[in-house]
Length: 164
Image (tube, rainbow, N blue to C red; front, side):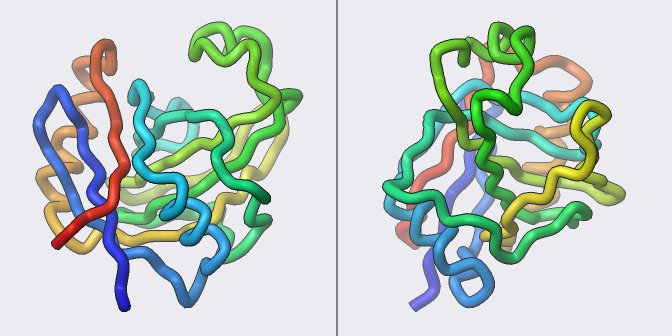
């Protein structure tokens, strides 16, 4: 049975629906599904280009490890990153209020083309593609672009199970 997530930008009142890619990333899909709902302040990528994300405390009993990885996500991809505390620099942790966490999960959604997951400090940063937006990508992308242009202050990104 196909499973779906709703991804919402709360303040902008826009939601898209994504299908979980259980055949391609079964461990990641199960970890995310069991960990839902997840929510936090939205951030827009500086380097990866057309990406919004939130960082949350680790929620899986065991990290899924790498599966269905990419460094070139396409529009509509949901990507899961697990970062150890040492991967995140002090200023970044302070900016995102993550100083006390030993590691975080970055739940990202890519809304446009020409993305490249490379970080100037550490190089390539592959992530697990675990979902694909199947409904309302255009409106959600417009709202994500507004996060880039108008700012993310006060906006929350919410991932939850979609009931149909």
